[in-house]
Image 1 (cartoon, rainbow, N blue to C red):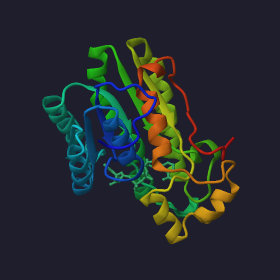
Image 2 (cartoon, protein in one colour):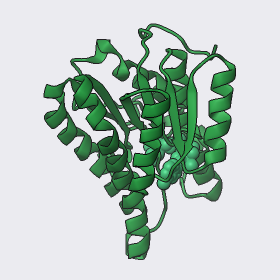
Image 3 (tube, rainbow, N blue to C red):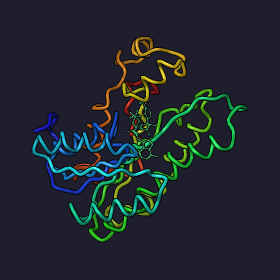
Image 4 (cartoon, rainbow, N blue to C red):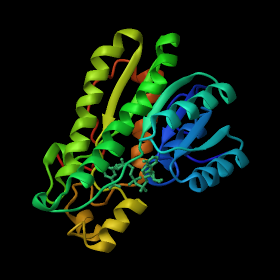
Length: 258
Ligand SMILES: NC(=O)c1ccc[n+]([C@@H]2O[C@H](COP(=O)([O-])OP(=O)(O)OC[C@H]3O[C@@H](n4cnc5c(N)ncnc54)[C@H](O)[C@@H]3O)[C@@H](O)[C@H]2O)c1
């Protein structure tokens, strides 16, 4: 079986993870599978999602892969219909699909702005709205969105990304107010720098302005984050034990943005 079974209770609730082909989403899918949740891995890279699902199934988990662009609402709805048919009603939605871009504010053109908002914010809306009817029906649900600490602090040369993630935080808080009376909690995790392919690509291209080593030395816990750091917090928020936690911004950042 996959690693990282720990103190979080094991249950059997169908979970959908977007962006599950890589980085944070992949680690979340592994963690939820290790806790015996059937997992649907959605990613625009069907091959990456398929590889991850096969790995999980080989380890005894129940996993399905779906090639989906979260911007494509009919595509999201169709994938979730298949999830219902193959695994059952969706009880957990984790939205990790996202893209980033770097440009000074005056250089951001409208197409880039719209693309970032579409994937990061509208993609989150699409994924959550498509899943929520199942949770309302069940009177139980967990929504965890992956936002970004940059939306709390601000960040240079990425106003579109920061704005999209600020939208994700605000959307999550609105969902918590509206859905918590129905047994559905909604929380967001705004990570600082996490060692994923996305962050490594930004480091290599110079977009990050600082490298991992320097970031680690400046972080109170003296390391950068791992996808598992985010996955472990996500799994707790998915548990019954977290039923009184909703509308919260749960920093997973090593104390970087205290
Ligand atoms: N890595 C970090 O330092 C960091 C920090 C803060 C926030 N985040 C956020 O965490 C999330 C995951 O990032 P990551 O670092 O794991 O990146 P990643 O690039 O490793 O993984 C992102 C995954 O999302 C998928 N994806 C992208 N656009 C998609 C779309 N339109 N539809 C479906 N799938 C799509 C990609 O194919 C990829 O598999 C993102 O939302 C990112 O903004 C990351």
